[in-house]
Amino acid sequence: MADRAALEELVRLQGAHVRGLKEQKASAEQIEEEVTKLLKLKAQLGQDEGKQKFVLKTPKGTRDYSPRQMAVREKVFDVIIRCFKRHGAEVIDTPVFELKETLTGKYGEDSKLIYNLKDQGGELLSLRYDLTVPFARYLAMNKLTNIKRYHIAKVYRRDNPAMTRGRYREFYQCDFDIAGQFDPMIPDAECLKIMCEILSSLQIGNFLVKVNDRRILDGMFAVCGVPDSKFRTICSSVDKLDKVSWEEVKNEMVGEKGLAPEVADRIGDYVQQHGGVSLVEQLLQDPKLSQNKQAVEGLGDLKLLFEYLILFGIDDKISFDLSLARGLDYYTGVIYEAVLLQMPTQAGEEPLGVGSIAAGGRYDGLVGMFDPKGRKVPCVGLSIGVERIFSIVEQRLEASEEKVRTTETQVLVASAQKKLLEERLKLVSELWDAGIKAELLYKKNPKLLNQLQYCEEAGIPLVAIIGEQELKDGVIKLRSVASREEVDVRREDLVEEIRRRTNQPLSTC
Image (tube, rainbow, N blue to C red):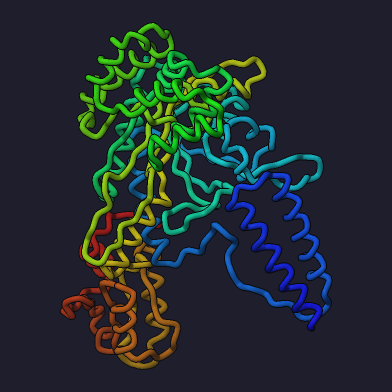
């Protein structure tokens, strides 16, 4: 036991050493070497025949969801799905893992966050990092050139989790995409309209949607003097401006990425600007940008986009922001990201920094990467950051102590006397067959008080009470749990009365 304790202490110390190296941003080789030592120590520990401690926990960056949390999630998903369907989207699904080569080279510097799996019978696989690349693979594989689809599913990232801010290693994405060749900016404007509709419906606070265009960014980098080979890496630095100051971003560009200070200063003059269509028009007259073909194309499309956003009545929610970069490699045109302007500060709430709550953009070249003949299918889409939205909604509910129903039961079938189990079973079956959401307690002779108390705790609005007298009279006593009012209802009218009181439409399960 002493040897095992010493070995456990060595594992603990080596683990702390590895974590320290990661925090100090030591070289990958040094970290890998120390991780190998840690794994060897753990292997020795595993060979111990003695009883080992087993810690019951979820893996890092993941969590369980209670019925209360799932009830909140279902409401959020319902708002999102109804909006997607309102705009004519179909639904698809794809495997949770893809061939490794499908995902390789699509995410820029974020590629290191992909979960690669061990060799599975000759196929190198990775867990999906997002839903966009699998969608592009799906289009190319099925030779589709036109579809409007939504997809809600889990994705996986080896990110450093921040659970309180809604950042996990396993999380849901809710994606909507329009694939096909259409007139410029009409699908893009609809995607922004959908984003605004969903965020407004969820009532999580005031938000702003930042928009930019990768062609404007690339044109800006070119006229500022950034070498072509550094475009993507400088783009990822600019993308951090919503989290850190310009001075920190500039230091990274110059100190870590080798950009000339005067070039960084020229970039700074542009990326600190934001506004509306007037800024677009101003930049179209810019002496440098107006000479760059890519930038002029991007600015022209943004000007058209703003015209459509005005018609959709959402231009007041949109800001043209030159610092918005979106690090993913596959974007080719308009890009956008929604952020909360401020957290709702209701009594008892702590401010919660949740960052971006929705994002998306145009990616016209991604499908062509998978097509054997390189045929392109233009695409534009958006993704709702539901985990971050859940964090906000959950915190609000915790602060308000609002009761959340975790079931949809409309009525509890109860009995007032003993030896009425058979009658309760017959009645609950009739209700189920009629599409009514009903329950009964799993006891032969439950006390009426216990049955009523169960309704109070579960939030069930109605109780259908059977008694010997009710059976003789052919009625059921229907009780409102909230008001405690009771009324006799003819058995044949019971379903209709329950529907009327719970506003359930005429339908069956």
